[in-house]
Figure 1 (cartoon, rainbow, N blue to C red):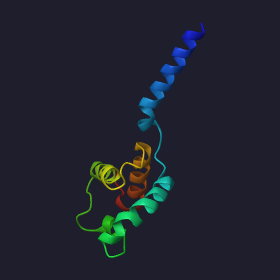
Figure 2 (cartoon, rainbow, N blue to C red):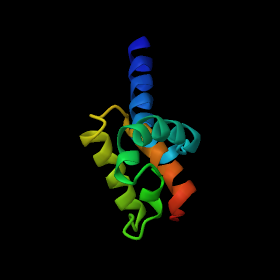
Figure 3 (cartoon, rainbow, N blue to C red):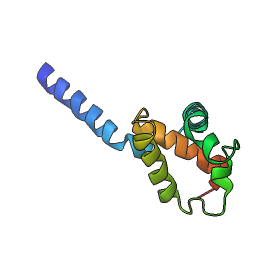
Figure 4 (cartoon, one colour):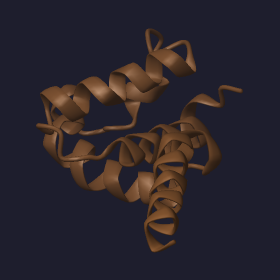
Length: 104
């Protein structure tokens, strides 16, 4: 009987992990902390003469939520060497969207 319970528990954990991205809201507060600690100091300020947030208000900024997600993932992989987990990326996207983009 214990073997069955272990497998049921394992199945529930695996199922929950598979839906974690869909069922849990991103944390914009954590996203701001990650963004400010990594993006502002390591990359953005040097690109826009010290005003890091200009990247999000310029004319040719990202035009869709999907494009924003892709840019955050690219920065995480290429610039930050994947320091963030996928949930961290989602938190940063949530922060940027709430603060600058306002995509639905």
